[in-house]
Image (tube, rainbow, N blue to C red; front, side, top):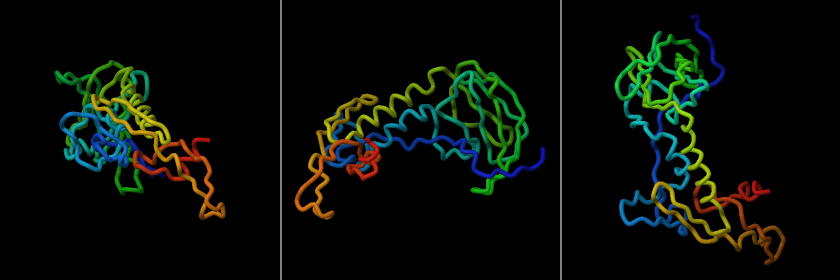
Length: 230
């Protein structure tokens, strides 16, 4: 197949595990973590709550062979498209069931497409025909194996719950409390006296601007976050 030029980047990303829980003060003083032991390092951000479920079975990206094969470690719905990409030349691939090692699917690659952002020649593996729920790895001869991934109807459930829990905990102007994976996070109502008009000709008056969300789990609330609440 001839070389094609890719106008953008095929963002079929590799595994990520930059996930940790927020501890005291990470969201700015008021955020508290109620756990007796095993507290994560100071300074981690509540943003990662939405990421904790995104790679439930992904190994460290330090594995060079796994990082060369990029796929969705959240998982795939049985009847939906399933693709992976690789920054190495390959012609055939197979999907292997884990555990057990049985070959569940074989296929041929497509490509290459040129990624102008990275200068890489990208090859693609399409295994959309694989619909059987289970845990798998994608194996490419001469390249290596991917991170583990799942096929199932529930693959997005944990990510959905984590994302909405994070949006709730980012609320500003009201007390919040929620437990995520056995760790309880909370903060009291905050930023109730903001929006003073001293520097915009309003004297010492203020406008009620309570509400909205903190910025990505940090203990501040840029104007855009206030406006976005309507």
